[in-house]
Image 1 (cartoon, rainbow, N blue to C red):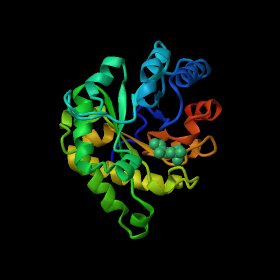
Image 2: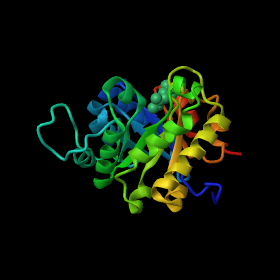
Image 3: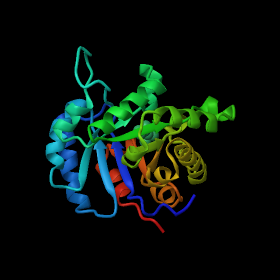
Length: 258
Ligand code: 13P
C-alpha cells in the first residue's frame, strides 16, 4: 500500500471505562491540558463515562483535548430506556465515540450488526466513530485472527459510504492484551493492523484505507508507546488503565517517533 502513513495525524485516545466521577474527570482534563500545552502534530481524546461528558467538554474547551463517548445508540430518539443517541452527544460538544469495544461485545452481547448501525449513526451526526476490532486468545491460537478481523471490519463498515470513510478511526485491540499486561509486540500489532487496512481497502477502497487511522489498544503504557508508534501503520493508541493516571497518560501523549 502506498505511503508510509505519516500523513495521518496520530490519535491518542484514553478510554476511562467505568472510572472517574464527573469532577475527577474535569480536573484530570484541565491538568492534562496544562501539561501538554498546544499540540499541532497529534490529536488527544479522552472518553469518560456518560455521566462525566458534560463537565469533560467544558474542561476541554479551548484546549488540545477533545472528548469522546464510550458508546452510542443508533436511533435518533424514542422509547429506548438507557440509551443515548449520537445527536445528543454532538449537542453536548462530544466529538467522537468508541464503538464495539470488546467489553461491550462480550458482556453486553454487542454484535457486528449493531456496531455497523452505531458507526453509521455516529457519522451521520458528525462524530468520529472509533470502531474496535480484535480477536480473542482462543481465536488467535486457532489461527483465526485474520478471519475474525476481516469479518469485524467488513461487517462494521457495511453501512459506511466511501465518501465518509475518511472520518472514522479503527482500533485494533486483541482481547488477550486488554488489561493483562500482555501487549502485542509492535510487529504482531503492525501485522494485524496491515490486515485490517487491507480489509478496509476491500470494503471501501484503497484511498479510504490510506486515510483511515488505525490505532492499537491493549496494555499500552509509557514503557511501550514509543516502539508501538514507531511501527509503520500504527496511527495511534487506545489506552485503558494507563489513561487513568495523569503522569502515564501525559507520557503516552508525548510519544516520540524515530
Ligand atoms: P488496557 O490499556 O487497560 O489494556 O485497556 C485497553 C482497552 O481496552 C482500551 O479500550
